[in-house]
Image 1 (cartoon, rainbow, N blue to C red):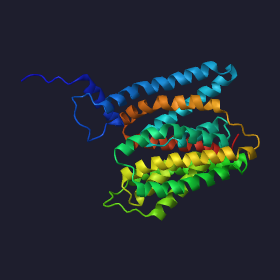
Image 2 (spheres, rainbow, N blue to C red):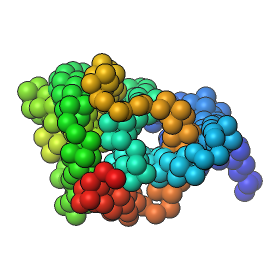
Image 3 (cartoon, rainbow, N blue to C red):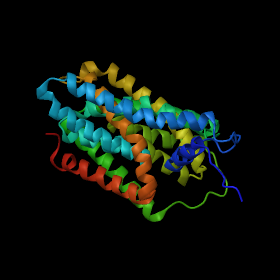
Image 4 (cartoon, rainbow, N blue to C red):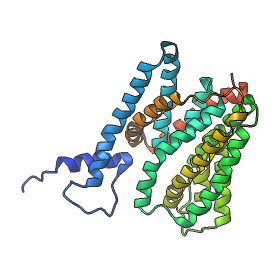
Length: 319
C-alpha cells in the first residue's frame, strides 16, 4: 500500500487549527492550499514578529530613565495578550498591572479600551464570516453597551483618583471571581435560544458600565450573562465582540471629551505602542499555551493572577 504524502501546507494549517485558529468548517478542500488557512498561518508567524519589533523600537528610542518602567509595562501587556487568547480576558490583567506600576486609573482604562479596539476587529471578521454575529442580539447589546460605557467613563473622569482606583480594582476582583465560579459550575446546554431585547440591552448596560470605568469586564460579565440568558454561546461570543468595539469607542470619546476636567491627568500616547506590541506578540503563543495546558487550568490561572494584581490597589489605594 503506497504511503500517503500530506502536503506541508496542510500540516501547517492543521497545526495552526489546533491552536484555535481553524478555518471555516464549510471551506472547500483544496488539497491543503486553502487561502484562509495560509493567510492565518502567515499571520501567526508575522504578528509575534511585528509585536516584538514594536517593543524593541519603543525601548530603544525611550529615554534611559523610562526604560525600566516600559519594560515592566510590556511584561504586563504580554500577560494580558496571553490572557486574551486563552480566556478572552484582556483588561482584567492589563489594567491592574498598570495600576501597580503607578499609572493613573483614568489613563489605564482608556489605554485598555483603545487596545481592544485595535485588536478585537480581527476576531469580529472571523465570527461574522462563521455566522456567529446575530443582529437581534447585537443591536440591543450595542445600544446598552454604548450607554453603559459612556456613563462609566463619565463617572471615572469625575471622581478622585484614589476612589476610582479602588473601584477599578473592585471590578477586576469581581470579574476574576466570576471566572472562577463559572469554572466550578459550568454552563448548562442551551436547548433553544431566547432573545429578549430589553434583557440583552440591560446586560450591555451593566457590562459596558463596568468596562467604561475600568477598561475590563465586558467579556467575563457580558458573555456569561448572555449565556445564562439562554443565548447560544457562539452568538453570545460573536455578538459581544461587535458590541465591545462600539462600547469601547463610546467610552474613549467620553474620556477624550472630559479630559479637560481631569486635572493633572496626561494621556501618554507613546505608552500605547509598546503595550500594543507586547500584547500582540503574546497572542499566538497564548493560543499554543492553552492548547497545551487546557482552557480550564489557563482560565483559573488568569483569574487568580488578575485578582492578585488588583488586591493591592483595592486594599491600599493608588500609590
